Amino acid sequence: MNTTESTTKPVPSRLSRVRGSVSDFFLMLYRVYAFIIRFFKEVLLPPYDLKEIVRQCYETGVRSFTLITLTGFIVGVIFTKQSRPSLTSFGATSWLPSLVSIAIMKALAPLVTALIAAGKVGSSIGAELGSMRVTEQIDAMEVSGTKPFKFLVCTRVIATTITIPLLATYVAFIALLGGYLNVSANEGTTYVTFMEQAFEPLTFVDFWASLSKAIVFGFTIGIVGCYQGFNADKGTEGVGKAANGAVVTAMFLVFIEEVLIVQIAGWFR
Amino acid sequence: MDSAERRRSIIVGVFVLLGVAVFVIGILTLGGQNKSFVKSIKISSVFTDVAGLKKGNNVWFSGVKVGTIKAVRFTGNSQVDVDMSIDAATQQYIHRNAVAHISSDGLIGNKIIVIDGGSPQAPIVQDGDVLQAAKLLSTDDIMATLQKNNENLLAITTDFKTLGHQILAGKGTVGALLADSTMAMQLRAAMRNLQVTTAVAWQMAAQLNTFGQKMNTKGGLADKLLTDTVAYARIQQAIAKLNESANNATILTNNLNKASNKLNTTDNILGVLLNDPAGAKKVQATIDQLQQSSVKLNDDLEAVQHNFLLRGFFKKREKAKQDSLKAKI
Image 1 (cartoon, rainbow over the protein chains, first blue to last red):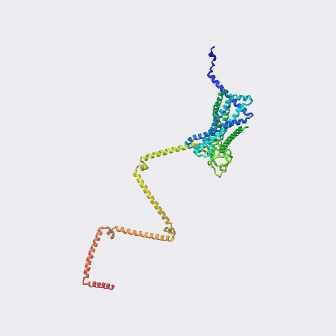
Image 2 (tube, rainbow over the protein chains, first blue to last red):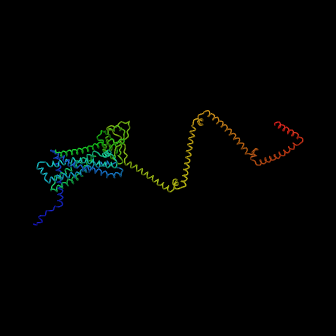
Image 3 (cartoon, helix red, strand yellow):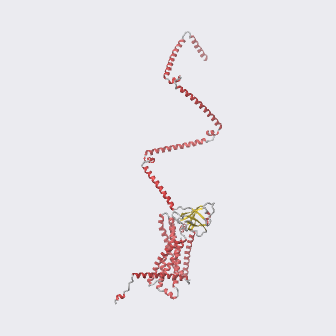
C-alpha cells in the first residue's frame, strides 16, 4: 500500500463545499432562531434579576452616554453645516431646521446610536461572554445551578433594548441642539422658532417609527452580541471572533432592519 | 446593596428618567404642533382634485394654522372627501359660508387646505359641517396661462424687433427723428417754444385767476353789475340808446353810401367834377374866366369910384366910417 495515498485526505468537490456552506448557514439560522426563542422563554419566567439588569443598563447606557452625546452633537452640527450650501443655492435656508429634524428624527438618531452601540456595546458583550465561554465560566455556572442564559443573556438584551432607545432620544435632542447652534450662529434663529420649525414636518408616525427602530436595534445588538459570545469557541481566538462577529453582524442587521422598518412605517403614513 | 451599586442604580434611574422626559417632551411638542391634545371639531369638504393632499397636512384659516387633515378618501363620482380637525378655539371665527380650497405651504411646500371668506351673518361652523370647496387652480392651468403669456411676449418682442430695425434704418417718424439731426433740432426748438408758451399760459392763468378774484370782490364793477338793479337799468337804457344811435348811424352810413355812389356817377355836377376830366377842364376854364372877369370888374369898379357922378357917395361913406371909429375911441 502506498503511504502517500493512505495519508492524503479526499479533496471535497466544489458542489459538496457549497452544499456544506448552505447547510452551515441554515444550521446557524436555526441556532439563532432557537437562541431568540430561548431568550423569550426565559425572559418571561421568574426570577427577574433586576440588579443585574440595572448594572447592564449602567454598562451599556450610562457608559456610552458621553460618546453618544458627543457623536450626536457632531452629527447635528456637521449635517446642518453640510446641508446649508445646497439650501442656500435655492434661497431656502429657512428650511434648515425642518431638513435637519427630518434627517435626525427619521433616520440619523436611531441609526447613529445603533452603529456606535454595535461597536461599543455589541463588541463588549461578545468579548465578555466569549471569554466567559472559553474560560468555561458559563459551564461552571450551569454546573453550579445558576442559569447562565438568564443571568448573562437576558439581562444584557433587556438592558440594550431599554438603553439604546433612550440613547437614541438623547442623540436626537443633542443633534437638534447642535443643528440649532449652527443655524443660530449663521441665521440668528431663536431656539423656540428653530424647534417649532423642526417639529413642523414631523408626525407621530415618524416618532413611533424611530422609537420602534431604536428598540429593534437595541434588541438586535444585544442578542447578536450575546449569541456570538455565548457560542464562542476555539480559545482566545474565539473571543476576538465573537467580538468582531458581534459588531459586523449587528451593523449588517441594523441596516436591514432600518430598510424594513422604513417600509413598514410607510404603510402607516 | 453596597454604595457603589446604589450609586450605579441612581445614575441609571436618572439616565432613564431623563431619556423618558426628553421623549415625552418631544411627544408633547409634536402633539402641540399637530393640535393633537386640544379640543377640536371635525368638518369636511369635498373636492374634485386634492393635488396630493394627505393625512396630517395643515389647515389654515386667514393665514393661521387651525387644524390638520384627518382623512382623505374617495366618495361619490370620483370626488375626494377630506376630513379636517379644527381647533375648537377657532370655531367661532369660521362661518358656514366659508370656502375651502387647496393651496401649498410655500412655492414647493406641502399641500394645505386654506379656509377663507365667510360672512358674519352666516352661522358659525359646527361639528360635522361640510364646507363648500373651491376649484383648484392646477399647475397645468398655471402652465397653460404661462404658455399663452410666453406666446404673447414672443409676439411683442418680435414686433419690437421689427420696430427697432425700422427705427435704426431711419424709417418712420421716430426713425427720422433719431436719424435726422435737423428734425431733432426743430423738435427741440418746438419743445422750447412749447415751454415758453406753457410759461405764458401759466402767467395768463395766474392773471385770469387774479382777474376772477377781482371780479368776485365785493363792491367791484362786476359785483355791482350783478347786484345793483339801478345801475343795471341805466346800462340797459344806455344800451338802448346806443342801439338807436347805431341804427341812426346805419341810416347815415346808408345815405353817405348813396351820396358816394352818386359821386361816382357823371349825371350830377359833383360827379362830373370828380369823375369827368373833360367836364373838370371846362369848369376849370370857366373859373379861370371868372377870375379874369372879376379882375377886370375890380378895375372897372375902381374906375367908377373915381367917376365924378359917384365920387361924392364914396367920400361920404369914408367920412362916416372915420366918425364911427372916433366915437368908439
